[in-house]
Image (cartoon, rainbow over all chains, first blue to last red; front, side, top):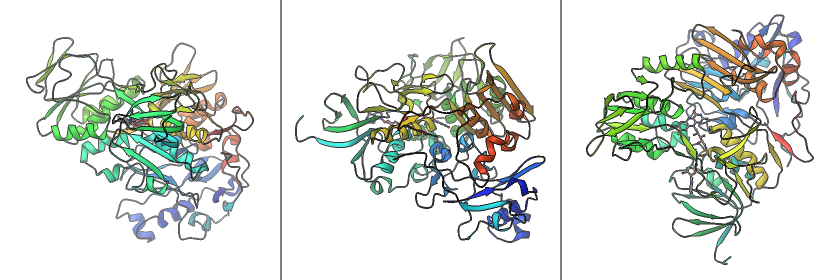
Length: 153
Length: 442
Ligand SMILES: Cc1cc2nc3c(=O)[nH]c(=O)nc-3n(C[C@H](O)[C@H](O)[C@H](O)COP(=O)(O)OP(=O)(O)OC[C@H]3O[C@@H](n4cnc5c(N)ncnc54)[C@H](O)[C@@H]3O)c2cc1C
């Protein structure tokens, strides 16, 4: 599957990816409204990791062996067998954060207002996820890179 | 064996985390082999931890379902629900239902979970005394709340706190009686327990530690409990939540059992073609380096997944699990894994407090062997995986408890290869065993 990779060398930590993610996932899709937050401030599904001079933008890696899906207590998380995308059913998630306890990337975003997790969905409907499309420095790459299957059949 | 006995390729006893984990793994590699799942509970697989939500707000069964309603049909799984298996014959590869029907199998998974520990306390069999393990328990408590406004919860562990969270939302008066000196004493250290104690009390719950219930009294119901020091606490309902024991009844005398059914790294029991996982099993704990019962949902699912692959002939090794919990009750987020308290002086303890945030890691010989995160748990998985991958953390141990802990706090080689393009193959820093065909599952 296509995944989002980073090129840390050229990431300036400008947070534009965050802004566009937030906008994309706000219900109104209106920049101003999204940030005034009529339904609680929409959360970006990625975050910027920084340890100066290192910056990179981090989100769910849609793992081949998704520990979060296996650990999920409620069945809210699942990995689509066709697309490989790991999705959360926000109506089923109760915000126990067990997914966060097993995510090696620390990529789970808790929405504490609604007591549920939110995550990268690779922007359904877009050819290229908005964080990648709007990165001014091409520090984000959306590409299909072959991964070894962890389970041999 | 009589010819009229149905035989399935895969028989799974227990329709919960472990059983579903196995069924899903089997269907990944064997699309057609017949699968039957038996449970004495009458419901499709539901999220057991959510029974507390059921109690709180009577959320619908649909919301509690662990898998979509069409799961069994879609995966061509025969679900025998509300059916109890009374006897297991490993030699003949048969089980016998409580109603006498026999069922043959080629591969069997025992994922029968646990049973509540019921102490021999006087009055424990009275009406108004409940345990809290199943949806039916939650339903029974819900019904009984019509007659009850004061509840005593015996046990301040995971299940005790869980039932309390549900009951608080129902506006009843609650007292938790905990035998040890602090609540959640298995999964948390002293400092984190104190934070949890505060959060629970803030919700109006009374907590009595260092006490046990000596007697439950009442005529045709419960009217009070008497503690070991003679104190009487008036109440009209009691919930017994002192723990669970592996439900080994089917296995006793047939499969090697210790506290739970003993399984090897392939989740296989002492009997060929029989596997076990979940709360009933004693499987490999990567922190203790030995088999232990670790009764938590993720371990049940992973153990089941590994068992399922092996049952279907795809040799798969269990990397092991360890005690781990993430809870968000009473407005407090806590996550812990591994050893939360040092066993002796040979451990290094690093901890830090930032207001309502508390973070601790326990190190042994430079490796993380335990962790507690309170108040903010979103990055707990980074530490958990350092522990699981057995990464030596000497060089950056302080970063683990720093306020701004994150993936970037780790040495480059631990994150770059995983998220940078072009992505190199992921190799665990410490090689896991790689015999021949075997594969390790995350
Ligand atoms: C209130 C509560 C809160 C919890 N919260 C958490 C949490 O936050 N995080 C976490 O990780 N874990 C939590 N747990 C623990 C978690 O639910 C268990 O670890 C998990 O359910 C174990 O799954 P399992 O598949 O091993 O067995 P179980 O879920 O116990 O299922 C076993 C099934 O097998 C059936 N069965 C047994 N014997 C027979 C038989 N002879 N014939 C037919 N059927 C049989 C049982 O009736 C049961 O339905 C909680 C548990 C409870 C009770």
